[in-house]
Length: 294
Image 1 (cartoon, rainbow, N blue to C red):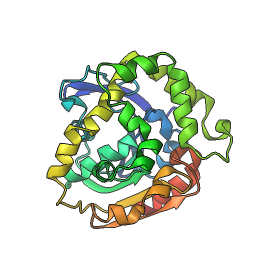
Image 2 (cartoon, rainbow, N blue to C red; image 1 turned 60 degrees about the horizontal axis):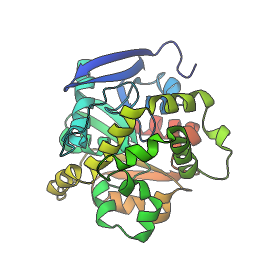
Image 3 (cartoon, rainbow, N blue to C red; image 1 turned 90 degrees about the horizontal axis):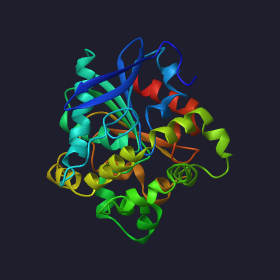
């Protein structure tokens, strides 16, 4: 069992979709938002420990896991980070939390960035894991970026091209992503629990494959428009940035310098791992989050 019995799993309807989530704990609320191609299960190594100090809420983003997977609109607006952020705020408000901490990984970190922009009075502190801002990455695209993050350009293709290709072997595609982005010097089985892997594969069905492509299509279109409008507005929320020393982000960007162009109060460091910090270095992530959010 990945999560202990103290965690309750629920499905709640908000903002036009149903959001699946687990929650438990004591103390100030801490929202944990997963990334691609995973689900809330990615927090299983750290959520039980954090629940001793915080009230933990682990949702599946729209399009992922057991949450709703609506068909993408022509302009991809229903998978915009503004809409995903609104989902998260309404979820926390429904649980009685008008102010909260938030930590996001990968796509969840991009939702976290938007939360800080759109709901500064509700997000007390935030942590983003292993990303640079979407706007910065697209605006500074080069061959190195296009090679390392080829999926950003593959998943946004129209006419169900990526959906059709991924559906030929979804389990292979998902596991290849996990292998490719994690540190190479540690055995795959040591980084990813088999039960968690089975959950990721099970959740990566036809509807989820489409929905997650829509997530990336939104990032390359409506999210860029929204980010451009807010480009001259830095977030004031205290921001912790964590990233993998053995990953693409560390090799490509001066991470804290980049984030300092988007936020006024930035701290953070690299952990000795690849992209999947909460599964590759759970004890270090716990230590960083406990220290920052307390």
